[in-house]
Image (cartoon, rainbow, N blue to C red; front, side, top):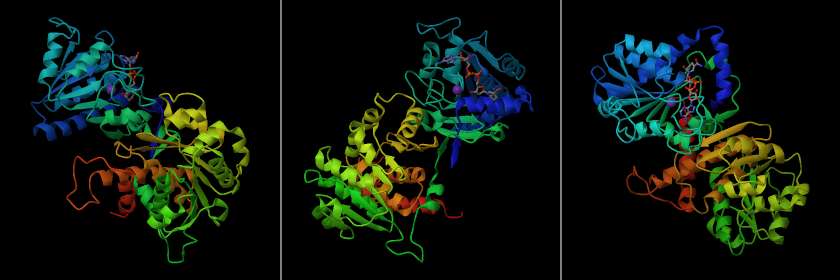
Length: 507
Ligand SMILES: NC(=O)C1=CN([C@@H]2O[C@H](COP(=O)(O)OP(=O)(O)OC[C@H]3O[C@@H](n4cnc5c(N)ncnc54)[C@H](O)[C@@H]3O)[C@@H](O)[C@H]2O)[C@@H](O)CC1
Ligand SMILES: [K+]
């Protein structure tokens, strides 16, 4: 599990560090790490370091200071370094002095010989000749998108970009981008990951992310946000042991589908069948279809006849009418952990009385997409997905899995997990039904609800990736991939589970 810290937490940790280590020394550590990564990239891209050219894009704050000092370190390795200053009067004085002492140059972004875009001739030339660009425009104190001159400079870059701390133009706290922003090949960040490295567009714009401690890590508090990695999941994915039987490995009930929508039932049930070794019971109008496709399930037409289960998945395709409401009420009254998805979220959002059916001691997982989330929260989803998911989780005393390219999972006690998919293959009809089945199956095995959601989201997106790239098809694995349907995603679930379990094996 990797921690993710808010900009405020990092700033406070830096202040604690400065009590022991002077700020300039900390900045030089940060800058040195940036220089090391730049040299690595130069070497990989151009076959060497000495004699290559680097342009630094330097803003008004300490982020620019880091870039300037990194330039000074690169000069010592024989790199030609030109700093392009966006705010020449405010550029970090010690960093600028350090770069000049090392033999680097600094030119204003808007200097003599400017063309219609306002970029000076020397700045344009530095960018054109660069083998690598360092983004030191803004860091943790960034607000909003790149301003026009910075945006124009960034637009001209055709070589790899190394971002200092974070790609400029990305909101540090939400990862949102609402205008021009840097797309980095590599981001070197300090102390620990920030939300922008793992959330939404920011995650994509960050490229590869390298974290360097610089003494800040030790000062950080418990993270408010965490990122699961494959090994965490593989280590804890429930598999049967020598003492287990079909009951002890978890019995999950699936209440999904209707005569009109049997597909949701088949997909959710199939996901539960593939997720764990336990038993899957299905209750609903699609019992015949479910039995035909998944003979290992115990399927019945009526929820009252379903038999004992240890957790329920409810919602996909049940409709929002009287029968859907009856099913949801039955499940909520069962006292078992429940994953409520799709139509059941809509019912809960519309019908306050439905909440009275809930056993307050049984965990409830809600898995809304943005539209369903808006119904629950009462307002359109904004940029702060983590903050909003946390708020709704607390308000409803439920675990909230907010779907999207980055899945955000909030517990009622404020803990948040993030699954950074970095690919959009699961965005296909029926994919949510598969996720619901996975969550129900894991809840039935007794995995803690927050982790259940994290494990399920990770395996779900990995299965989609595996399916899209053809790893389960006959031919060779494809680099580019192709769109998939939810059935293909479902078929790849065992491959995804194998992959995370293999990741947990000792190397
Ligand atoms: N505190 C420290 O000493 C350390 C900080 N470090 C670096 O310092 C950075 C934070 O530095 P600062 O707090 O000085 O701030 P930044 O360098 O992030 O921002 C500087 C200035 O840019 C302006 N600005 C904000 N958004 C802008 C935008 N969209 N376009 C143009 N200008 C914008 C702000 O008014 C602010 O004054 C970190 O990201 C990291 O790179 C590292 O050197 C490690 C140690
Ligand atoms: K930056």
